[in-house]
Image (cartoon, rainbow, N blue to C red):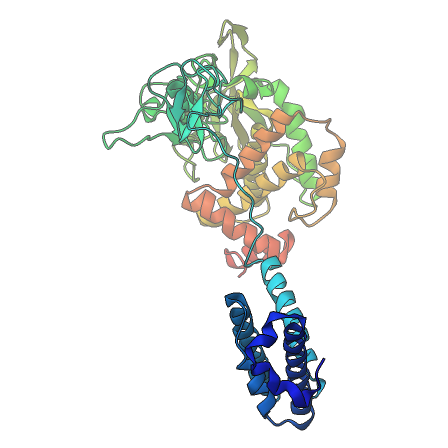
Length: 501
């Protein structure tokens, strides 16, 4: 290979014909490349941008090429060299310029890593290709199997085998042309009506719509018995105790005074005066346990509705709960008809009741306590507790009380007794002595769920009574008793005639 000083001989055309020319070109290219990297190293150390193009390099690149691909390769290599120099110049401005050409490799690695992280981030979720189905491929929405042949049903953007399109309620196939749809579930029209349209709990028919096209019905506030509005005017029987209407599939008992009694209330109904005596004495003991002893032996009689109404007429003073009075504390001398023998059941009627006139002689402020017969034990006891409070007030000299005060405090005693029967372990009951609840709960056996539910209903009636005397009076009296206690409230009533505030 010729020394660098003889490189001008490359301009002679005959040199390209042999190996010598090839060696000379190789030598020139390597020299140029070494100078290029040498210059790049200087730029990296010195931070200055110089391009050195010696004369011999220029001469070497003016040599003719043997082929067009050599020229293209030369232009490409020269362009790459120029790009590397410009990149090096820009790199000098970066914080890590002292690292030389290594920055190019690091930058590529960082860029590759950042690009890969961007692909892995949530902004670029992995692509999950959807399965490809042929144009006529259909999957049944019921059994999730392919529909291969035969008829199919299209509904809700889904296809079904005819036997797989089933009612969500009865699970039988829907074969009718019309059906009901609730959400994503199909129904037979009748099944959907059964699920959504309320039925009357008296006649068991769908409750009809009114003139405005709306479903209108009545509902008992405690029992939640839904029924058609027409049953309030079509002589449908109503229980005189719990107020529920008589369903068409159940017969209520008919009392001789025209009242009706449902089967649940009939289970614990008290029918004559003799049957009521144990209950009456237990409530007197309840009063004694609260240090409210009633010394006088006040007669107690069970009577029919007519006898009770006659006694009300004969009573000069007193406030009575209309339209139905169930108990009365008499202060006048009267002759009343009491029930001496309970009636027997004949079909669904109570017949054969024996009555006897009873003359009441006034020996004190109270002559007798009358209670309507045929009511459940808990309701009869609540009435007795109410009327005994009237007797206690009169015997203790509480006179000329207004109806709200007298009826209100009597309702409080009725409520307290019911609470001790239904919830004997309750400690929220207002009383002046713990003996009031301990005594009543120790002498009675366990009651059925039906009887307890009736007791809760009677308590609910007292709390939600809308009348000014019985309802408003109870709420005012109960508030005073809860705040000051029963004894202090009674003392305040004696002095002022009003509840303490």
